[in-house]
Image (cartoon, rainbow, N blue to C red; front, side, top):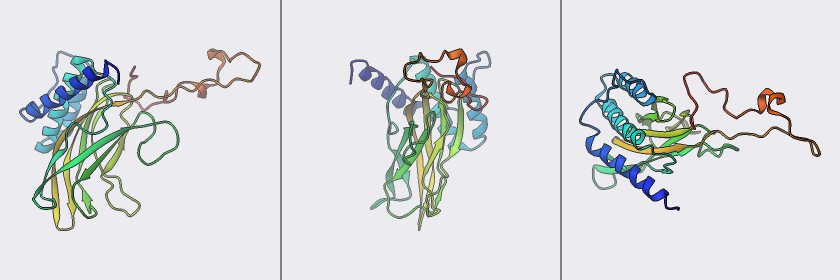
Length: 245
């Protein structure tokens, strides 16, 4: 860990702590006089939340963290777990109160191991401290990419091979710094866990660049003569996204 990493992580923790204190006090709205990716994404998230108060609280936490991260210019956060475990009501070993651990893993090149998706994605996962197999997932994540302005409210609705909730979801965030809030409910036999929002900061790596193939003894092919499919991976991303450096 170099000397630059600690200040970055300290700033990230400060952003999360500030969000925990201020996040549920108001609804985030974009300034109509500005036109930047973060404000546009906040407006989109607020509209997507509608009148759902739980979703609005999560969006507010996400928005405030995103504004702090953008203002501080934080990059390469490197966190895998969310900033803190989510307080959870309604299930537990001894008391009707426990915590839910949440994490996100940035996509990696190479074969799918089931733990992370392809490059440019972020896989969210929740792990309640309770026993039994979940029967239904009402978990959602509100996320915002500070770099490219992508955002969304996405349910964690993936299923396991046994057709039970995986409490996970892989999201196409694109590369950059992503702020996210996770919240919702999980049904177990005889119990429903209500998961209060937790906020996290994550870095999704840039898409890998594949070099143009060369023949031994020959000079590399000039970029202008290279086949179309040897450019940077992910150059054909979906509409509405923008490049993140």
